[in-house]
Length: 137
Image (spheres, rainbow, N blue to C red):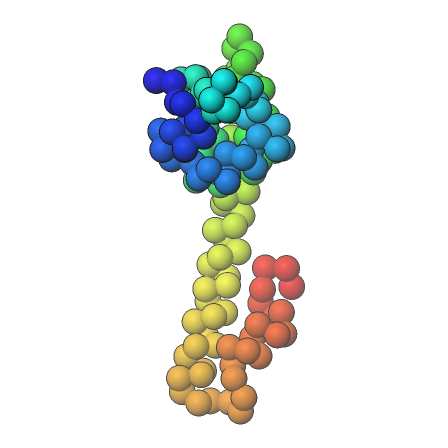
């Protein structure tokens, strides 16, 4: 399953062409030499790496976390170290869920106030401007 050129690699991996170029620029995927026709030849392993990165991004892993996971994947027994990265990411997701629930309650209250006309001005704009009740506040 080699890909003749970045377009084919994009199609096989589900990654956008510009995203693949970006990953090459930041060293997440190797910049491959070009063949005589000026196309990069992506091996099955290269395409699989792109699939891995795309899937990890879909799951919310940061580029640094993905870089760490890719390094760990090359180890003989990466499971314990991968567990630590995944557990940290899971903790981050759970914290974001708590924050999102707080934001949803705040926004729902502002929308209800807006619909009811309970206050002068715009409750949604006021809520967003004040920072009160936001996760950072």
